[in-house]
Amino acid sequence: MSKTAKKLANLLVTRKLPDAVEARAARDYRAQLNPQDKNYTAEDLAELSQGMDGLLIASTNRMTADAIEGLAKGVRIVATFSVGIEHIDLKAAKARAIVVTNTPDVLTDATADQTMLLLLAAARRAWEGTAMVREGRWLGWSPIQLMGVHPGGKRLGILGMGRIGQAVARRARPFGMEIHYHNRKRLPKDQEQGAIFHQTAEDLLKVSDFLSFHCPLTPETKKFLNAERIKLLPQGAIVVNTARGGVIDDEALIAALKSRRLAAAGLDVFEGEPKLNPGYLKLDNAFLTPHQGSGTVETRNAMGFRALDNLDAFFAGKAPPDRVA
Ligand code: DGY
Image (cartoon, rainbow, N blue to C red; front, side):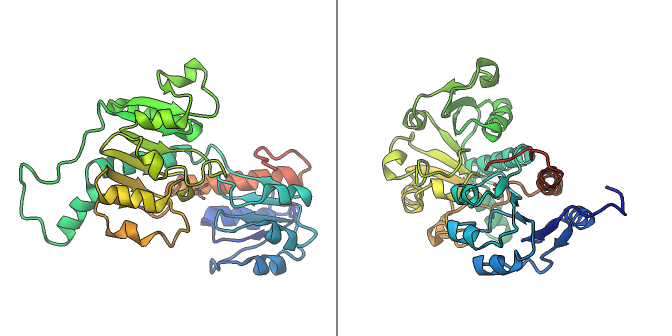
């Protein structure tokens, strides 16, 4: 769009976004930004959405039915700066004829990279190692110090074989891992690339020396990994989660890590984040990162541009490419 072109619409941007994304939003829209990155409540959104045509939100904005109901009548689209959409009540959005879009594809590689980081860190006891060095407790090399486990030759169970699950499989194969998966639908052979399909998630657990979550958080997956299902995992299995914290029953996982029924976990997402279950903080076999799966400059820019592409299409009277409601 040229400098003199008409701005497309009034847009409320609810979080501080990367500079390049904000610059494009301000160039093409009468954009109200959030430079202080204030954590808007539903009441704030009700007020700030007055006079707005669209909202560019993030996964931290809980768009419940009430929050959607509270939005000003002129709001016709909510574009989320995320692939996940569980923070938006899609039924409520549809009922108000509000279009919803997300940002698939662009964060696949970054999230798969973060998954490998967690998988390797958990397997190789990276948290214990860095703490030992930083706290001056390292007394020198020893033959039995911090012996972890080797991913090579182990079975990696991927729960949810969508874009990110498949990207993780591509990364794990060169490490010598055997890929197993469960998905609502079995993949076509060419996409499976030799991965072994399991009809049920429980069958997958039984063979998962490493288990990695790549499914959305839905009523069906909520607290999926509970005490009962942990019993199905091989002794000493390692659990990795870059999907959503809600898929794990924290108390059950913490107990299994404490007792060493499970060897380790690598977790990037937590139920109730940023207030995670404090039990995790006491565990030396939990490698924890702060929901940074998509946290690269390239990816966060691409997420913002993708959200803006959807808004641009909508306000140009075209179908937004990533419409989810
Ligand atoms: C996503 O895009 O869903 C990431 O988890 C950030 O919310």
